[in-house]
Image 1 (spheres, rainbow, N blue to C red):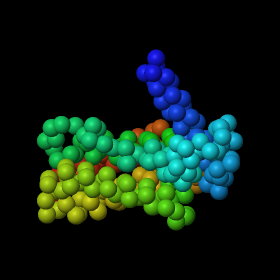
Image 2: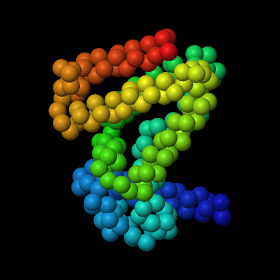
Image 3: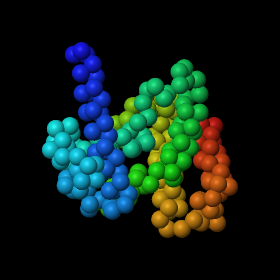
Length: 209
């Protein structure tokens, strides 16, 4: 009986936490960052605001967790890395960058987080950048640095350009218009051309660097 009670309590706790996380997303996508207030989050979730402190420690920690969950690169863990790697990570890197390109395009909430990170200095957003860098460092040190050896810094610079470029194209497509260099980045055919270009750049880097 005790085990059943504990299971039910854990399930209710997780459901409550999820309601708050969903409320953060709803407010972020419909009203913007400024509306992420404790009372508004609790009202949107339909729950007592005290539970935010009980389950997350406070509003900032709730937002931190939400951002961590939404971020693409912070969630690329070891279980997504194929084993063994015999190509210096070429296929893995290509797959991840292409997946990121699609993920950002489809996820309105994460688009807002990216814009937020460019327009404001907040602890939660700095934590996001730090988490991205820490996770990326593990992948770079463990996979690509040994492969490229003396050229590893050049590889990192190339990837910085490619990854930031895909971020910008997705945000441009959603907020500024559809065409960039004559390519419709909102269109399936246009996005397919961009993906071909991403693959070409990554494969060329592995072949020529």
